[in-house]
Amino acid sequence: MTTIYAHRGASKQAPENTMPAFDLAYHYGADGVETDVQLTKDNVPVLIHDENVRRTTNGVGFVQDYTYNELKKLDAGSWFHPSFKGTPIPTLDELLTWNQEKKMKLNIELKNNLIDYKNLEQIVCDKIIAYDMIDKIVISTFNDKCLHRLHQLPYDISYAFLTSKKRKDLIRFAKQQGAKGLHLRYRLLNKRLLENTNRESLYVAVYTVNQPISLARVFKINCQAVFTDVPNIAIRIRQKIQD
Image 1 (cartoon, rainbow, N blue to C red):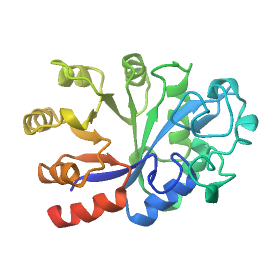
Image 2: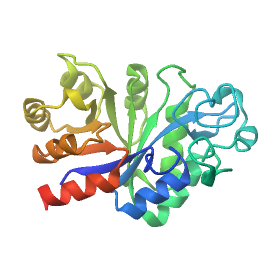
Image 3: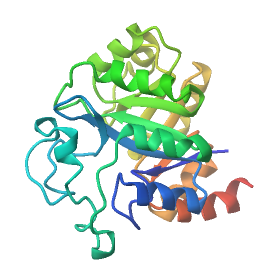
Image 4: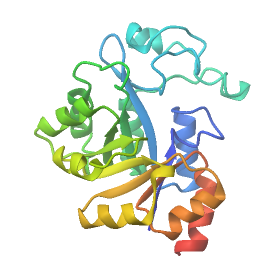
C-alpha cells in the first residue's frame, strides 16, 4: 500500500511545519508527516521550509541568524489564519517527542541546498538516535554533498535522494551514495522507472501531489509513497483504489 505523507503537515488546513499541522495530519489518519529542518545560530534544529523567516512568520531575516530563543518568539501562524496567531516554529525535539506516542512515519528533509549548514547531518542523526526513532524516519536531501556525508556517518538511518531533475544515472547515483529511495517530482513518475527501481531495491516517493486524478494514478501504479498537502483527500482515494 502506498504510504501517505502529509507534506509539511496538513498544510492546506493549518500553517505548514507547525504542531497544529502535524496534529491535523495525525487526526486525518496520514501514515506520516514530512517536514524541513534548518539550524539556528546556536545549532538548534528547527522545522521551517524557507531559509528566510519572512514568508511564514512576522519576522525578517535568515533562520541561521537567529538564536533559538529569538526564533521561538516569532508568530508562525497568523500569516495562515488569525486563529493560529502565536503558533511558534517548532524544534525537531518537539516533533520527536510528540511522535513518541503517535508513532507516525517521519520524513525529515535537510534544507541545506542553498545554505549548507555545518554538521546538520550529524546533529539530526544524533537526535533521531537519542529519541529511538530510527525505524520511523527517513532523511531526504537535494544536496549531493549532504548525501555523501550521510553515507559516511556510522548510523543505520535510511535516507533518500530528493530531485526534480531527470538524469540518466539517477538510480546508479542513489545506489552509490547508499540511498534507500528516490524522492521525485511527480512529473518524473512512470511505470518503467518503478520497475527499474524495484529491481534495484530502491523505493520511490513522489511530491507534491494534490490533484485527485494525479493521486489516483500514484495509487494505481503502486508507487511506494506520496507527499501531499491534502492527506484527508489522498486517504479517501487510496481506500477506493488499494483497499
